[in-house]
Length: 411
Image (cartoon, rainbow, N blue to C red; front, side, top):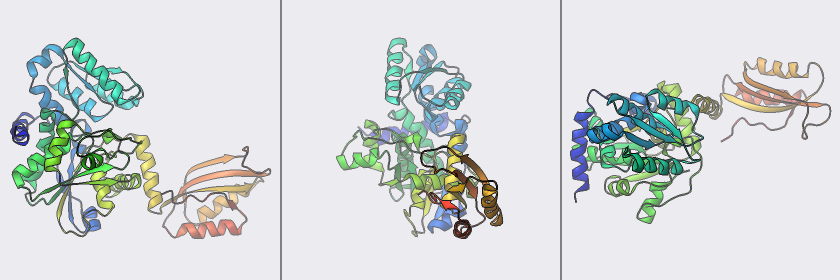
């Protein structure tokens, strides 16, 4: 069976079906990342897609391909993120009832976003796997069409429309870097890109080190279940790639790169500061690979697929502070001050002298680690430049201030 040929035919069909339904997202060059890597780096901005991520492409094509049955029985999916919203929006557009099973601890903003598209949300299970089993159970009981997040030829084909857009917008593309969760996105993009541009274009999978499922699958020669850890790139934290997606990826994906959490955070921060783009952790993976030095100095045309922008505000806040810290533009200090009038005022006067702006302050007198007669003061503050911190710390020490733990760089 010619799996790649069959899915390529579906991709071309999907490209017609989604016309006028999804956004044909921009492909723009980033001068900052281009200069940083000594390449021409282009961003495929799926964070500007409807529902804030690429998932709507595959969900819409899958539902529209089985419209009569979906209208009769409805659709069901399991997801705690972008797939939930993609299915809910697509079902709403097509006048179909949708049930989305989400793990019980899904953040309320994700639940509310999914409900806003008209879906019925059922909270079930502690982890995704339990929500998935519940969705399958609902499908069997009600006849609702189950919409798989990645391991389905129609879903893969819908995501493959991104590959058509890249190949037709930039015929000189040399590399395409794609985030990998279950593998549906990269499978579709790789098939389309190689069918249009040929095998000269290289497609590279990017995964967080905290969930290296495709990396380990390549080593093992087939899908394996890997232990995973929490990651900023929560949208790609799956234990395994799919059976179908692995088969496709093993034929059309040229390489896989693993990136650490610091690189993901820094990529998110720089996308916000330099490109003015809010990007979720999974969407920042290709830029994290570039920051890590992948393909540096190759002078190639590199497309980074920015797969989504649904980052919650708490994560964004942490990423901004982390990014400022890494850049040497924010710091955190813990000070032990004599618990007497004026001690805190004098310490803050040193920060003011060096034009530091306080972001957070915590003052504590009671604690097992706080000596009698002292108070613990924890400060988070902005710096005008990298060089100010060492001078500031030296002056605090000259005044007798005890620094209990200088944490200006938490990498």
